[in-house]
Image: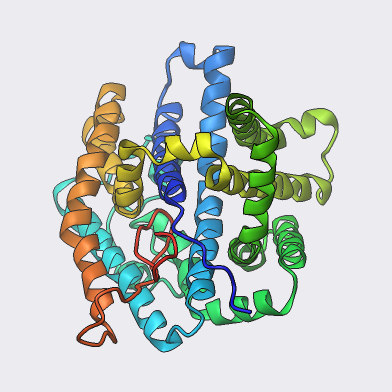
Length: 391
């Protein structure tokens, strides 16, 4: 029997946009906290908020990985006869062309704004003052690491690997129960966290998204049955409370040492697993709750989802330009954060959207006007085969 087709989940587009904004604010937080912050930031409420922002920044890319696995697997689940070779070419074009644009933007910025300035904190100091040929090549290819000219590109490397291995993930999802796949991927990722193995930590996160894609009809049935038992007001309130709780769980690992969890195995294991569960539940809640889904499908949030990949790729260059030019002046930093959004929109219009259109033409027949491009990434928006969701 053919699998149930799942329609586009617009709220997950919005979730991607919110996550990209979280990465931007997390980096701005690092700059501010590492450059003589004002005493008021150490007040309990403010400090907790900043800690939450830092925790969200640390795992927002995990959310992108899960969403990528979910959306791409859902596309293949809805369209099982998709040409895999065409998918790979379109996917790579859709990812690499914006990456090259972001690298070019960073290089142009370095020409006009000197980065040879010390004493601006460890995050700023991790960026090279001048580009090196090998660093640029690494950024443009992504296969052997990155050159730190645009540090968010580190996550695109794993996206490329997942893109090439997607068929293996789909085969696994069709061979075993989704629940087993989810458990195995969570276990493998936790082991990766324990041994600080990036490959083992990140690649199973895509598998969690794939597992959700194949389990989604069941998840939706459970959500529908729960909604029928509760009034709309109570159901919405419980969903919002649950979302706040699971987002707050990102702070739980900071409390583990205070609770006596200090083992070199137990601490990273519980930290990784807690954040994985939190990220997974965020996807489920935003994707199934009517109340939360309505908020994440608002016009502004969906606009953020549309430009999220461009925002993810360009925000660092904008922030660094202001930081180096103004010695991390707080007012200028706030202005830089605001400027990131119009810059991302212009990048989307000038680079990402044309790249998207170009990718759709790869392998398309003359009458094929809805050909999928399969292009998710940390913050990336794209089309998938109707009626699958927009990554």
